[in-house]
Figure 1 (tube, rainbow, N blue to C red):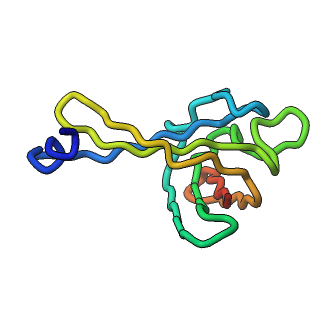
Figure 2: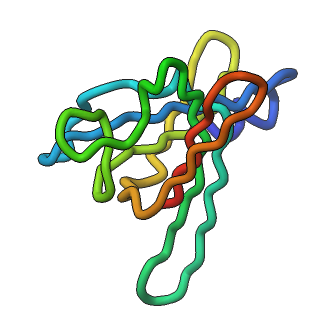
Length: 118
């Protein structure tokens, strides 16, 4: 029934959300407002099946990786969800939990952006 709604809908709007998780994989913070871009790669081979790159707006160095009192560090976990808006309903699908492996801080237009590779 939901699939029929998608095909019959005049307008379908994609939406995304990103959560920072704690060590028990519970949501500790919604990072969706700072999400600037994301790319998700899915392969069906053995081993690592999903990889993700995200770019976060790093206003005031909020997302600057710090080992002790920072929000993130190597090994931090994020959950990424995608969805579609049809009418006044959002249909969400969890795409996975991803572990921060490497990061790059880039300065652009007088603000910092954090690129995370998971």
